[in-house]
Image 1 (cartoon, rainbow, N blue to C red):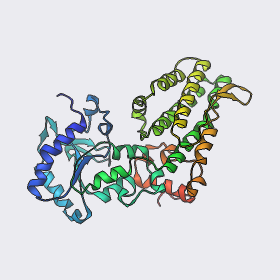
Image 2 (image 1 turned 90 degrees about the horizontal axis):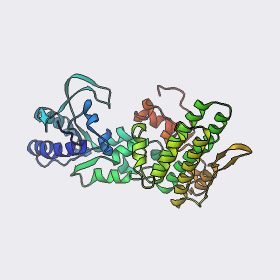
Image 3 (image 1 turned 135 degrees about the horizontal axis):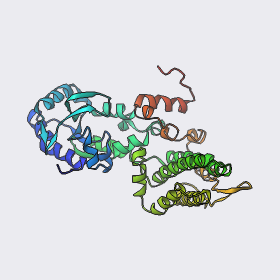
Length: 366
């Protein structure tokens, strides 16, 4: 079977199957539809390999709160009327759904969900963007979730643009939040940039490479943030970063830094990448240019950028008092890397909110 990109498959499924069912069964129903809930196809990164599990025509249907009582009937109608196949792909899935952990070995689960829009947003994000996006909301939302909801496609928005408006509200950070997140990222770099050299100096080549890999990941996420792109999770981080304008020299430098060479080659690549991303930071105009260049770490024989200078410049540009006084933690996925936290809205929100408020959550059952 010829591969068909997931977004194309989903759009055709809506236009040729779902929309006709809804028009026939529920004349005059106001709804929105799109594919926004996760998967490589939302970023246009799906390939034939993506079809080996839980793959097929799928999308989300949304209604407004005044029609929430109709959701069960809509789900029942779709359950009854969906075809067994569409364009050669089965419309029912077997196995783990990848979202709720539901295992369906019989393959009876279909890929069309129906939800009230505001409630879906609160479950998916922890808040409804239509009510405004607070600073706490931004910092409690993993960038992967923002990439999903603002990526993908809207196939129909018959809710007076309500779905489109919510996506637009999440297009990018406000300037002060952006500065804060970038400052947090540069703070992480500042805390680690001297460590690869020190590890290498004492003969710990493995440790040096491990720390360098961590710095490479931070710089790639930084590069995406500087280009107003939501960093995806690690599987797609390198692919999306490599597609940025002007990224090729940085990709080459990081490849050198992570390659088989000795510490001298590793340092050369790392310095080139650090200086390039520092230039990108200056070019945003979010802070006074630092023109950061590598220099010796104190009197030790390895080079660092002294990235704390960049972080300080960004923090100095923040005007929101609450953000200026906040430790440079940034967004939640800058200090949490657990899939089992970041993919559960209640967990990630509870953790981020506790840090925002200064409270410490000690009881995991709360």
